[in-house]
Amino acid sequence: MALTAQQIAEQRKDVEEMIAGPDVGFAKALFFGKFKSDLLYPYPTLPPDKQAAADEMAAKVREFADFAIDPAKIDREARIPDSVIQGLADIGMYKLTIPGQYGGLGFGQQQYLKTMEILGGHDSSVAVFVNAHHSIGVRALCLFGTKEQQAKWLPGLYDGSKLCAFALTEPEAGSDAGNVKTTATPTEDGSAYILNGTKHYITNGGIAHVLTLMARTPDPSNPKGKVTAFLVTPDMPGFEVVEARAEKCGIRGTATGKMRFTNMRVPKENILGQIGRGLQAALTVLNYGRVTFGATCTGHAKVCIQAMTGHAKKRVQFQQSLSEFHLVQKKIAFAAAHCFAMEAATAECAAFIDKGAPDYMLETAILKVFSTEHLWTIVNDTLQVYGGKGYFCDQPIERWMRDARINTIGEGANDVLKAFIAVVGCRGPGMYLKGLQDQALGGVRGFFKSIPAALGVGAKLVAPWMTTGTPEVPVQSAELRDSAHTLGKLVREFGLKLPHVFLAAKTEENFAQAELVHERIADIAIDLYVSACVLARLDHLLVARPSNGKPAVADPHADPAAGKYFLTLAFRRIRERFAALDDNDDSALLEGAKSTIAKF
Ligand SMILES: Cc1cc2nc3c(=O)[nH]c(=O)nc-3n(C[C@H](O)[C@H](O)[C@H](O)COP(=O)(O)OP(=O)(O)OC[C@H]3O[C@@H](n4cnc5c(N)ncnc54)[C@H](O)[C@@H]3O)c2cc1C
Image (cartoon, rainbow, N blue to C red; front, top):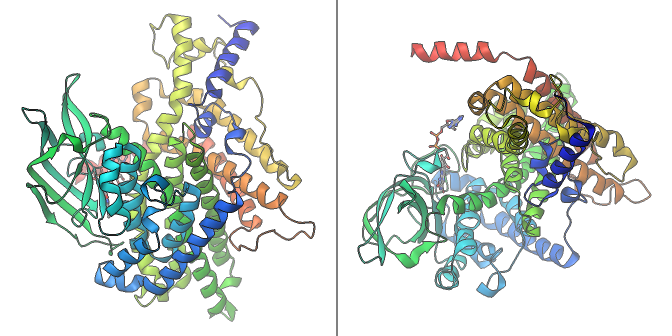
């Protein structure tokens, strides 16, 4: 039976109220076909005093990097020299985001990431080292430590005398981080825990002085126990470094370690955060790590663009410089467009953190996937433009490729994060539709089968949140109005499309396993979100442009042409993925995979 106009209006109001709540961030709202512009616009900028402090620090880091960090030597010797580690401490790198009361500089995320962008462009090993020590190591203590723990542990961690590591991964707990096997059993008197287990692939693991370590503690509500975070030190009896520096493909300067713990006694005072809440703490900390990827990839992309264009202009073949060939220009334009977009999306995510926004989990996952995936293409294209020259070790490009390869695997493999983006994003509309179904049908029938009836419109699928028309994407610049309108239409189409996708899956179980569909949904969400960031940045740049028509800032990486090209590329990709939701080769793909897997 069809709903009345009043019922539809009530449903729409319910949804509007639900989406307006603080727990639904910008990216989650996209899955409802909504554009929460106040969360993203205007483009974030820093007040003059904070900008000046960030610029001063960035200049110090650049000067130090140029003078003291030799990427080729670090790669060759597979070690970051102590002088670099100490030198970074001396210029204040490790205390940037630590609050003032603990002797830190109290930088916000936007300020901090400017320095990480510089390190990312200079040397990936050093950037990953700093990220592991500061972004995810020290940060865990700042976010979850008690006052006593912070007073005890923090000082040595930012003066360079002690290093930090964050140890979650184990032989059987990689992407499946919840499968941690390291156990922490309380002693009889309850004063301590006895830890047993192994951690591997841990940056700084074998050289750190303090580790945030995830282990499974007993829990009355769960026979498997729950994961709890502990602060441990290598001088605890039972702590063994099995391998301090595993040989590896890229970021060779970092020390990636394997450690074993045998009956290691850890006082209960060393529990970090709440018992049984370790995975939640890990996810929060990884949020910061993922935003840092945005900055370091932006820095690396900028260096690639400089190298690629510099070489393309100098190298002559067929009596023309390479830069005159359209297929070379295609690579340069792609790199500039995606670098512009990475910078925009990084600034927006950093601003969410600085504002204390309650929900930016999807945005950080999107930023990580977007920047690491496209940086990989940019580095690969840079090597292609260099030709044979790029393949030799006297040039940095082959090292850049080896270094960039880890980005799509570490801190959540991109494949897993894409499924996460799709499933978490779809949860909101899915739950709402399920609620409608429960109301309409008493919850007795399958949710997916019942969507049309639940929506009260027979076979015609119209989600109640989609009866309000195309969302407004507010831009001030007249040049951007068409793009803003197109983005609004694509966002609306996304919200309209999802109930059909749920319906095509037939059951919730099918949908939960449909990773090929998840990937398309995630790719659409990624390009929608990043396009929204790019429009905000473009609007900022174009509106700030003085009457002579020239950009206000002389930054070559703030070129509106690059941002505009990104929008056309992203809009085309989004349309292609919409089409592929209905017209694809998934059955043939799965058949082919099954056949091959069975043969080997
Ligand atoms: C150099 C380096 C430094 C690291 N530093 C740290 C650190 O400091 N601390 C720490 O805790 N960890 C660290 N890690 C571990 C890192 O986070 C893991 O490698 C990563 O989470 C992936 O886990 P895994 O390697 O076990 O891969 P697996 O989980 O075995 O996955 C392998 C591949 O399978 C695919 N895959 C897995 N699950 C799915 C799925 N559900 N759907 C689709 N595809 C899937 C993905 O393509 C994935 O890349 C580091 C790793 C490296 C290589």
